[in-house]
Image (tube, rainbow, N blue to C red; front, side):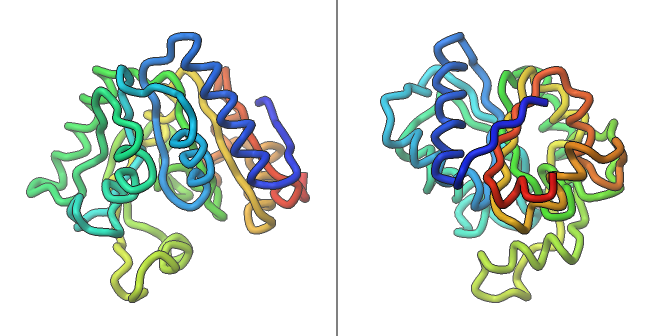
Length: 233
């Protein structure tokens, strides 16, 4: 693991942007993208830059089950609002959380990943150590699957919904093996609330009880954390 410590999330987003700038210059073709609050500043930098994504493919980590792409709380909508409407890609893929066959949707997504191997995967980090929506206990050999979200994850996401009772309880997520198949991984974690998970991810045992700990076994991982997130290292 390569760890980059920064003073605040703004500096962290700039460092992440520079990694993408270098990756695109070196021929990266497929980006694994993430949603949530953490990558927003990075996406703002993409939008404000001259980077050209029009020949690239984007594959997102996850999507809520039961939300259509037009739903303002869906990750389809999030990506459109924060990035895709400003920076078009050659093609973009996000799991189909509104599929009529929710059991078949993960297999279809695995096929997409197999056809478009990810060059650089972006990750956030949950307070319980989840990556994507791979909650504690998820097998390390998991591929795309339907996830029953934990109460802590549902509570963390409730701030994005007008009615906490409407927060979805399931998601479709790339599995841990799917994430680990990426050639390079970039994880961003900011704030004191992430400090315990960061410390366990970096220094703790590799265990399915903390999904992000598997990143210790990847050949090319960069972690960007601010001082607050690094406080327990």
